[in-house]
Length: 193
Image (cartoon, rainbow, N blue to C red; front, side):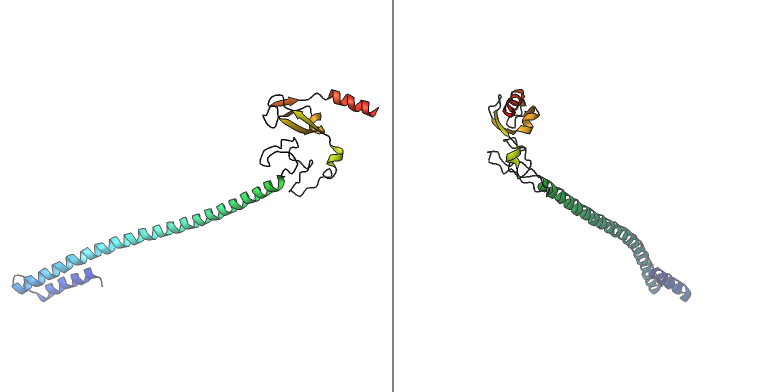
């Protein structure tokens, strides 16, 4: 039995006992029962509001659980991305050989000033695991030429194969350099004869 049902029962009991509400005792009992009825109604309203609040709290808890799951999924995704980035960085590090030639270029430069371009020849060692048959005999197969950039005056050492392409950019100033190798070819033919 709820509290409102109990106050309703007290009202019915007063009516059934035929208590005279015009007498002092009857007035007092009627006032007490009426006060109890109002308190019961207020408590019932509070219970209704509390039930609504509980329902809202349950919804918030459900949403928080979903947010926690989404956050965990996002953290896992970020961890996977970090691993992928680390893997890419490892591959880049493996494929970028350090310059170990005797030139004065800085290993952090984009291109070696000696014109070797950071490849396997000219004393470079590749970390990517590939093998180059020309590594051991580069000094026997390649010929190097020392040139001076007409724009900045930088001394440049380049391979014969680079010279054969007829052009390149100066590693110091970026100027386009063109080569005329016709005189070299004539000298080589005369040497062969």
